[in-house]
Amino acid sequence: RGRLGIREEHRWYFAFFVSGLLVNSVYFVISQEEDLLISSAYYLFNLIIILVFSEMLREKNRVLFARALGIVLKVSVAIQAALYFLGLGNWQGWQRYIGTFRDPNQFGIFIFFAMLMIYLCDHVTRNRWWPVWSLFAMITVMPSASTGTMLGIVLFWAGMYFSNFRSMKKVWRLVYGFMTALFILLFLIFGLGVVQLPDSITSHFMYVRIISKVEMLMGSGGLDTLLTDRIWDRVAEQPIYFIYGSGEGWNRRFEVRGYELHSSILGPAFAYGVVPFSFLLIWVVKIIRRSRYLFIYIAMFVEAMFVVNTRQPMFWMIMLMALITPKERFEEEEAEINAAEAAKIFVLGRPRRRLEAVPLKS
Figure 1 (cartoon, rainbow, N blue to C red):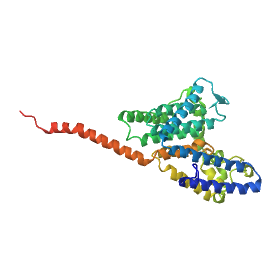
Figure 2 (spheres, rainbow, N blue to C red):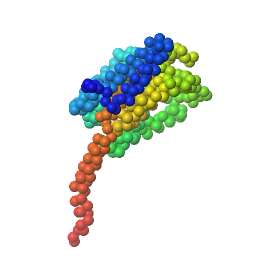
Figure 3 (spheres, rainbow, N blue to C red):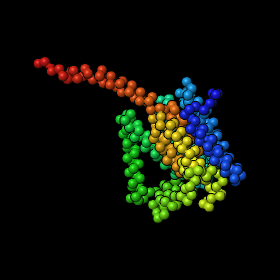
Figure 4 (cartoon, helix red, strand yellow):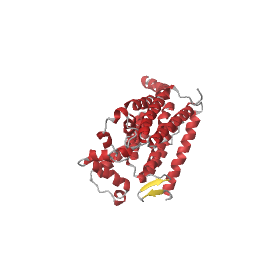
């Protein structure tokens, strides 16, 4: 057993990898389609990422590692933002910004994941500048017109606000409360058509995409259109594969369009079946349930429901960062803070109460 041995907490993922490899190998023997083995190679790469990254997070200098990781991510986001504002980044069809990436969704996912990791790193190192970088990320993602990413960012901000409301200072509560109320008000006013938006907004491709998707869902047959758009109709037509798996690849055999399922949750469940997917699900739950910041994982998995993130290393890294943001540590620190506040009130408040209780002599 070496330094990168598979720890007990990662054995469920290893079981998923082995059983998933078996499923893909069976279909490879039948079809001779190489993309089935390539899919397993991605999960092998993910296994290496999990082992290496989790060991880095366990080192004694993990706070220093989190600080260095945060700096790298901030520099990356700053570079992408600078390229956009300077007009040096690339575009796809002059409508969707892709920065230095080849696809707008890849660009949006990278910025979204970077924002989540910056938040976690800054809370490990007690850095309070994460809202600035979150704002940079939101501004930079807008030109990519990635609606799934924007949904994840909105859920992240909402979860962050309600999760940290009690620990926020009063001024920050007022600021975030005002911003949230203003956002809801503007959404209702403009969304319901009470006020006509200026052309500079209605012509923005992100606005056009959001409105078109809302109209698609609200219209007749909206659910069927969503299923077709995400290739989920394959799941509805052949649910038997949820039992023993279809293999990840060889998509041209399906009558429905020969593309992969656009989901990081339905995709593995459909491709590998109930047993391998159960191994993966157990591993995910065991890892992320330790974290204080469950709202981050809710936002990430809602976004992942509509896109394929399983080939993104940062997708697995964010889950592993639950190892350095445990509930127990923050509960202890919160108890210490509450005790310190109580002592401060006792020291400063007790004399004041005594003075008020003692009647003045005439």
